[in-house]
Length: 77
Image (cartoon, rainbow, N blue to C red; front, side, top):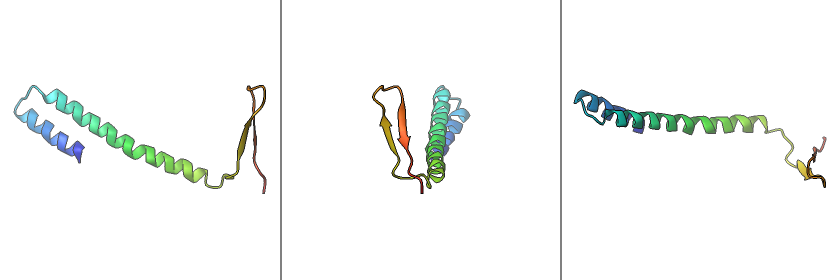
């Protein structure tokens, strides 16, 4: 809604030939980018969660003494 509101304000500023039109256009773009990220990140999280739903919950990671390697154990069913 804020994107639409800012766009309507930008249209009005364009009609009256205001000097602050470029700032309002930037505000419209900012709201649009925020709207896109607000909807894309949760969608991506749901996608990753769906792919990992069958992953074993008791996965353990262990750092070996040298610190350069790591080991993991996945229990087999």
